[in-house]
Length: 379
Image (cartoon, rainbow, N blue to C red; front, side):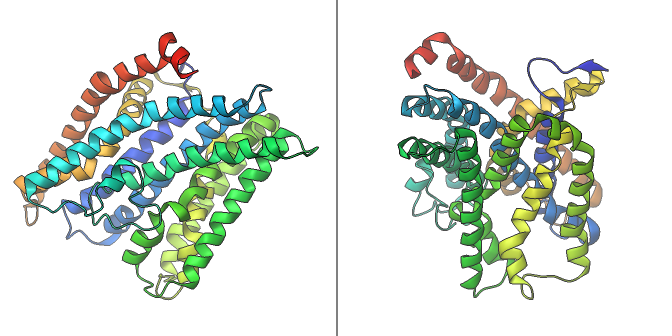
């Protein structure tokens, strides 16, 4: 066993790898759409859980960073602007790159581009509704994360103008809980007006829409706060929280399915509680994984590599790579062995392209972002 090093946490990188593996596993359904049974059930859940992990993990990491920034005496709008610019420098280049290639892919395969294509360039395509019809489908979670990073700091900045004896730490907690409550209420209001009661309507009308999903990131922000202000509790609860997480996942994905709680019969559960319960199950894993620092050397190298390409793989996996493959070499009705080869080629292309994007696009940009000149300019 060896230390993971480089100020990274092995457990969190492992969680990021699990998330991208779940997302890619889910996309395999489009290659073998006739698959049924337990594997189909796993595929239908994997994509949802994988993206929820990305959202919660983003909240956990960003929340810890911004909490520390908020507590500084020199906290100001200038500090917020610096925070935004560094984050956008990290997230938006891959987003824009994937968006441009998604447009080219759509043109190449002869599909119409969205009428509101301009919204994708300002991250508004799924702010109040998702009308993407499959175009750059991966983008919805990125917009949720970026609107959270945009609005969250502003909420905290507003507290500077409130005369109160409440400490900054307590205000951070109150704002976080308030945001979670507001977006739970938004889901409840959606449920009251949900006349469709279908999984397709749920997916495009709720699951992928910013005004209903910001709380997914804020569950991560909440536990990031707890990990800082209650470090002893954070260390002591890791095994208990891990057990609770596994039980909750089992209840949400096994017990609910076996009890036939479908959206047609239990819309309130699906519209209001299903996604938050997934988020809570994920945050309960974080005390354990955030304290997992050592690992066998071979496993360490593999996880570090896969974690480094996870974001690049995510933005290209369906709208670019899979759609191009299926357009040029349709996978439907392929023999079983050929389908396996098709899947292996798909995964290999993702890993290869993920590596090249990370090595020759993300890393140079990261070097620029972390340079003293750039930091001085941002300040």
